[in-house]
Image 1: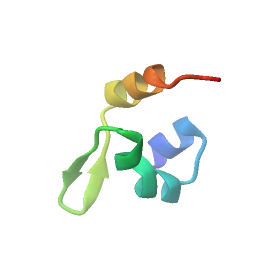
Image 2: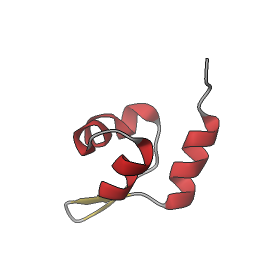
Image 3: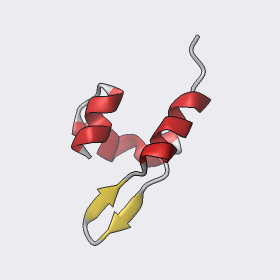
Length: 50
């Protein structure tokens, strides 16, 4: 989570609150929320910059 938040330039709390709304693919392992690097990069590539 720390790495994803740093990569996106947002606080961890923002990622926790919005990952599902954003359509970011996450995997719960116990209480931990994990993201694959390729899924994060794919999500970033799909974002439209206006």
